[in-house]
Image 1 (cartoon, rainbow, N blue to C red):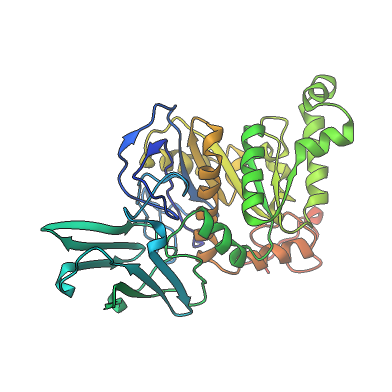
Image 2: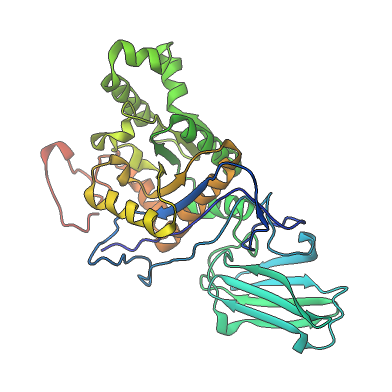
Length: 392
């Protein structure tokens, strides 16, 4: 049984209150007249199914949070200007300073602070009504609620939150595209990311967004193959068939497997190497994200679909570390999908911080296909040798 995590990200076309901040979880004001689009992301590595209830994570509890969440450019968690708070990461704790100017606070009894796990709610009593200054279910990481301290310093509310993980640096108080791109650098440690799924176009757009955000090199196996063959993938398919294209992409992936700090978009469909279980040897060199289109309309059915894919093992994509379920597709939401990818990858790596180092070891030993149970040096995959299940 291997610890893993599941994170749920739902992205839709919503209009929120003004003054956007870094990221949010407030209720939406109204739906826009756009096609419905949503994504739900999970980390899937080595899920264990002892019963109908899925167990995972350090505490092996199912995470069921499910809330509207889109890119930081289109929503707000606090109905006050985002510049009205300051944030400081102080190693074992983080400090939030929130401006109270104009709130006419008479005493500390006019302030309500509720911190719990990964959520934070701040409200103030003003003219007989409670005003929400900040509300989020997505703090950048877990805190120790019982050790929360807050006080008023002149016209600022100061809140000190104790981290569950003192080693993790928080770029901001909340999880957002900006904080995830900054925070992922310390977690990935240079490991590359491979985007797989049935749509080459979606794979490319999400990979490009991730590469720009992370400062990684964007690579596309489609573009590399077409440059090498001096013909389009479509004409190649007509001339030689999908097996030929998949074999060529597999060779490209082999050459890319030693690269670091790259986001690689792979071919979608039957011609893609990732669609074939026997072609994953070099994909394991990085963190793989499966962009999976679904008809599921809610979190539970999406999770059940993901469980079914993993348990059956019919689709080679189920080898991926992370799956992002999306209903429909709109290029305007590429960043939201990329954010979902980083959020799930963050939770996966935090559940086992040795994973990036393990990926590096896998590469150094020659990408022999023995992921995740890496065999000792000298192991020959063609000889069928075996070692204990724990690997190297």
